[in-house]
Each structure stands twice: as structure tokens, then as C-alpha cells.
Image (cartoon, rainbow, N blue to C red; front, side):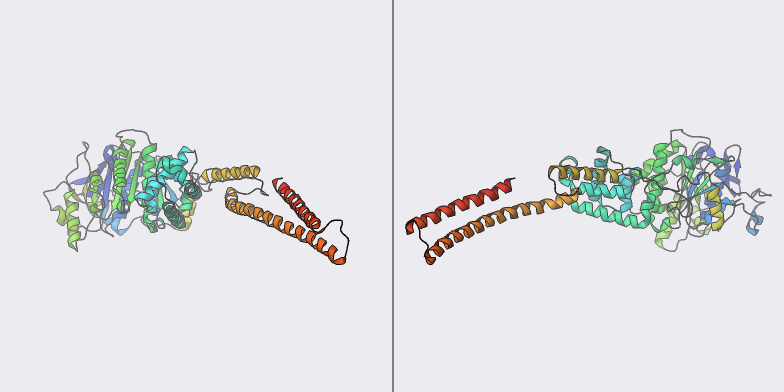
Length: 528
């Protein structure tokens, strides 16, 4: 529960209340524990405590359980047993102001990003490209930038890939080798991504990050992402959340350490962020996490074991809540020791043994003190939420969505002129120019003109062959006619003014004259 001295009451131990110092809340945190040990309830307690302090939060809802934060809670036997020990004899059950979001636009307001906003690095990870394919994708983005072509949605990227493939020789000397086979591999990966629903995520209007930083009635808005379907595509889920973090980092101004954060970002199933992730991208994530705290944003990773988080990032998570871990195998035992080593020891108990003996709702807790140093680990009970535990009905969700200030803002996708339309326009203009220079009937597209060129050359060659054949046929026919006439005259007894030699001379002259006349006429028509 939030108190006026910027202390956020989260858990209770034998020595008293355990609170997150508001000025240290942007130093990030970790909530870890095996399945069924209470991580989701702890996340809900953290979120509603920040909410009461006026700090908006963003969280992914894997099973729909977190949607209950939008409704007031109620007394239960569990709460009845603990309320007095927690110093809350009369709990004031209350809801949090909530906005629901959904990448697919089915259970909340749609969230979209343009392909350019996602960038080649994150897009490459999303499509599972290798190093060579990643390099070519970067070239495609560079060509688009140099040509002033906007890549907003999937069809824009597909059009750019097709364009670069057809002009590979032209761009290779300037940007590097562009293999048609590599372009084909990227196109196949894009098709697979599109079949997973990426065509509904990429586009406009793109999401405004500042919509996450709002309050209502003095409380921070709880931005809940429906992630049950998104979880079926782990790379899409993790890359989407990483994009959100990157947008926050690049958009928000520097504010340093504040009395309370501007936003708290909960990254559930955090191991997905680092599975199959290149070292370059892990380094990028580490940089964002290290620097985003100066933008007033706190990041809290929620996962099963601290070993899911790279050490370079784990060391930056100052506020820790560790629920129970099970040690059935040597690997599990190693994970328990690793988790225990991340805490400042408490002489009252052995940390590694305590981790394996924690009950549901219990945790080992260590928060940063006012100087930024980790406190001694305490075995504690996490508070109960004042909002509803569990999912709400579809009707309740729909009612909340309709009454939201964001209703209608992102519902309709906008398709403005971008790379796809511009490249089509260029192709049509090129086709018109070709048609004007070499009229070949009705206006055709560039592709049709290119395909027709070899056929035109073949046709032209065929015309010359036919001309030559026509000349030879005409000459032969004329000669045959002249000779036939002479022979006929002789057979019928017609008198000739000349001798036989004179007749032969006439035939020869007639043949030559006929040949010249026919050849001249045909070639003259051809030239015309």
C-alpha cells in the first residue's frame, strides 16, 4: 500500500513492513519462482500499489487472470487470516483504472507499429534470419531510406524486396552483394510471419507511447496486454515488448531519479526475451535497461528462475522478490544456489534452504534502500490484492473497452501512400515511356514490356526471313511465267520477230526486271 513518504508497501516480515522506496523503483526488479508459487498475485500487488501512487503500469496478461485488477476485490478466508498481521484490519477493496490492449485487436485496443519503427534488427530476429540475410535486409532498409520510400506495412516490405531483387546488379556495387536467393529466403520468412498475424500488427495508425503514461482520478492507468494468443508466437511476443521498451527509451526525455517512476513495465515470461537471441541484441537490451531508468521507467522481469536472465542484466535488477523453487535435479539445485547468491545474506537463515521451503504467497524479499544498496534478504509474506483475483467476463471487458478514452483511436487501419504505391507508380510511368518510344498497342506495365521485348526481336527476325522468302518466291514465279509464255508461243506456232537466241535474251531481261521491281517494292514497304 502506498504511503505519503514514497514508500510502497509490498510484503510483511517478522521485523515489520517491507517497502519499495519510490525513488529506487526505477532501478528495476525481479519476481521469480516456480509455477504456482504466487508470482501472478505478487505482480498484481506490485501493479496496484504503483497505481495507488499515481504510477501507470504496463503488463502482459498470459491467462486473462490480471484482467481482474479492473474490479474491486472482496473478503476471503485467506485475507481474513492475514489482514490483521499485515496491519490492514479494514481492507478498502477497490479497482484500478484499466485499459485493455491486444496486438490482434480482439480483446482490447489494437497496438500497431510500422515496419520502419520496428527496424531491421528487431525484424530480423522476428523472422529468424541468419547473419547474411540480416545484412541484406539492412541493405533493403538503407535503399528505401536513400530513395525516400516509406516502409509502413507488410506489403511495403514485400514490394521493396521485389524491387531490390530486380535491381540487384545496380545496387551491389554501392551497398554490397545482394543475392537473389537470399532475397527469396527473406520473402519466405516474411510470408510465414504474415501467416502468424503480423499483417495486423504492422501498419498505421502506429501506437503512441504516451498513451501508456496516463492517470485517471489520481491513479495510474493499468495498461493490460491480452497475451494468451500472442504467447503462441514467442518471438512475436518478446520482440513486440522489446520494441515497446526501445520506443520508450528513444521517445522519453531524460529526467534522472524521480520521487516515483513515470511508468513501470512488467515483462512476464522474461526468458522468452533471451531465448535464441544474438549477442548483439542482448547487448542492445542491456543498454536499454541500463539507460532507460534515467527516463523514469522501471522494468520488472517476471520469470521462473533468475538463471533465465543474463548475468549482465540480472546485476541491474535491484528490487528482488523470490518465490519458491523446486530442486529435483542437479540443474535445479544449481539454479537454487544461483538464486541464493543474488541476495545479501541474512544470518537468521540459510537462503538456499529457505528458497526450497517457501509456502505459496511467501517470498524472499530484498529492496534497495534510500542509498541504492540492497537490503538484507527477509523471509516475508506478500500482501493480498485489493482488486479482484482472477479473470473478468467478456462482457465486462467489452464495457471497459467501450468506455475507454482510446475507444476508436486505433480501431481503423489507415493505408496511406508508401513504398508499395510509389513503386507501382514508378513502374507504370516507366511502362508509359516505353510505350511512347516503341508503340506496341495498348499501354502495358513494365513487366509486360520487358517480357514482350524478346518476342518482338524474334518477330522482327521472322519478318526479314519472310521477306527474303517472298523475294525468292516472287522471282521464281516471274521467271517461270516468262519462260512458260515463250515455250507456249513456240508450241502454238506463234511467229517471233527474233531468232531463238533473241527469245532467250528477252526472257533473261524480263526476269531481271521483274526481280528488281519485286525486291524494290518489298524492301521499300519494309523500310516504311
